Length: 204
Length: 204
DNA sequence: GACAGGAACGAACGATCGTACTATTGTCAT
DNA sequence: ATGACAATAGTACGATCGTTCGTTCCTGTC
Image 1: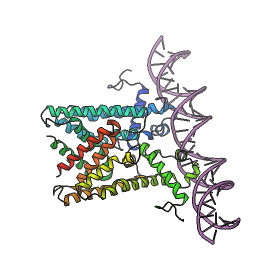
Image 2: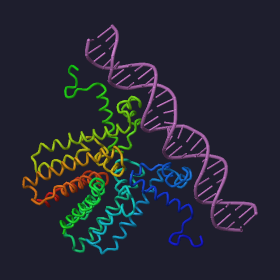
Image 3: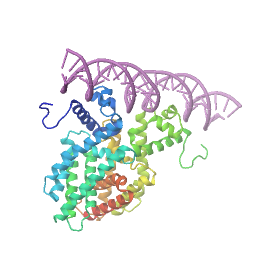
Image 4: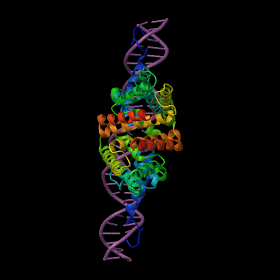
């Protein structure tokens, strides 16, 4: 590799693989991970079924790879940027704002894929469920930690239960993503922000 | 029909049709409406594919019928019972409590099918989406109305925005159904109730 | 320029999908 | 009891599913 893509070493295979995953993530965001299909994905990427299939070895592996890619994008575009804000309420706000604007910014026309995956596999045992719940748990922990930091900084009341606040934080995010289609993104966002402000206010 | 099932007139056909729908609702609650399959459903009800198919005429009609059945059960088991409580906060509480305990009471092992449908079709145009969103809108309106009654009764503050409260009400319900699988039903319910109490408190 | 290895393709498989037909069974008013 | 009609079964169709296999193409090394 002489002077390749500069940022990342990438053999040809890795490159097309990530193209496939990009298509898969978009598909999953609109119609869910269960809708991922070798044939459809092959058509969307202009490949043959077998050529695409070879990158993963099984449909399940493809689904899991797509889930990982979602998590990676979430970390990169929602979580890490928020970490640049000062710990405390400011960071919580950044996290919230990044999160609810993420699908739009990332051109995930179908909304938050994390939401999608959570609902799809919550009640269906298997490898996907395990993977989803592990991610979900991690996210919950990080969220609680961010709340705790706000408490430590004295920006939220001493007695605050971080996990309860994280619970309600997630509640607002979920209902936002749900209501977006129903109320329109604008109204939904306004309501979500009002709810979030009150959540912070309440625990101040 | 001499003295049939007493409560409902029901030809043989209608009876098996409702059996099919019962199976469909259960299936949809765990794996979503998109997972409904003529073959699987036929096997589960002990019928032939063609025999089952004849009841609906198309898969789409089957899905819509299953959705209607969900809505019917919701009305019957969640909404109407709450209407027996005195209007105001008491009724809101009943609505909330009935809602979060509904899947368990109705043996919908996969959680709230309304939640399922909302997420599945929010971003996918078509007849199912239209049907889901119509139901969703109706529910939203009824919920807001119930909140308004609490305001009128002086149990919530004068300036309260009923639709905002309905929004946050729904937020808690959604996150509850999501977290149930993650945290266990017991913890999730506790957190949901805390959140709900605070929502009421806040607007008092 | 020959060669190796990775990457993509084409064709085919058994299974299952939704749906259309026809035939058989069951139910109910007369 | 019989005839009409609703309810269910049987069979077959084209399409698509995930997957396998053998072949071809591309790329970089000696």
